[in-house]
Image (cartoon, rainbow, N blue to C red):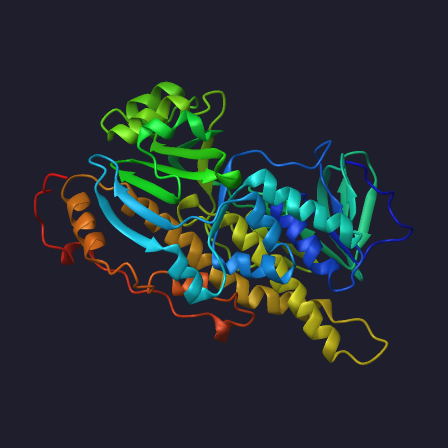
Length: 428
């Protein structure tokens, strides 16, 4: 892509990181009339990975930005989300995604990560965001009336606000918080292949299917208008548990899924074997704002992937920040600048608690999906009893993004495993 030259003078906002969170924040803020500059360390903007699930709390925002039709065209709107047992393939529970759209007003769609990134990148270009590559930020500092970043080439850039959207291994998180990433000892393998390669595997092309099994799970859904098929294989690594550095290797992938059902086993040889993703997160923190430096996306709240909300939360962060800036601008006396400190306080007040809930629920979801023995049977019994049109477990997260703490809906009430009668599995 061709990047426009930097405008003269400092921007209103510097965004560090050109991933989905950084571009989402840049777009949201630029739509409010702010001059935004994005600093990306890579030689070009892009994303690696495969599919993303985009729930109604995010498609609502894409619709507001005028991007939902493009996302629909590049992605797939599935018919159902189905959870099955990975050992015997029996259905445990499902969501009717057409009914889900009626409930929340916006669709649940799946899209290739690079396609969503491209949508946001093109929208930022149209909005006049200053997009700079080969800019590696090495340090952050507050100044008297804003903040600055120091770059690897020795230069400095500053603005009234710096947004650190620099990911799981954020330099800002390291310097301002100083905590460490947390390993779950699970690893993910991914693959996106032409749909023809899986058509005889017994796959459901119009559904998102999640197979949950002992210390493993497998996710499948179509991408790019149904032309591609996305698969994610996740498992607990014995080498990680043993403290080895070389964990999550392909031999462990094959061993982890040996006892699973036919559809899952047939998908495993298609997984990319030259790369894998260790499943890491961080413990939630209460403080995301440090002077005029604000953490956003995975720099603030990296989750495990079980709730499929990581990219969504990052987009919500930028939307919320921009909305609070707009509110301050409306209340500010004519001819004055909005109070950035008030904007950041409002952003932190609502987003920290919501994202803490998602992070902790994702951890709990991972434990639930990977149960074995009697606990697996109890989980299966509880899930089979669930009414497919009961939204108690989704209302707290799929509804409109809260702007204030009082708008945050109540959490769901967990069902104790011990409450389920223990019965042996019937033949499928």
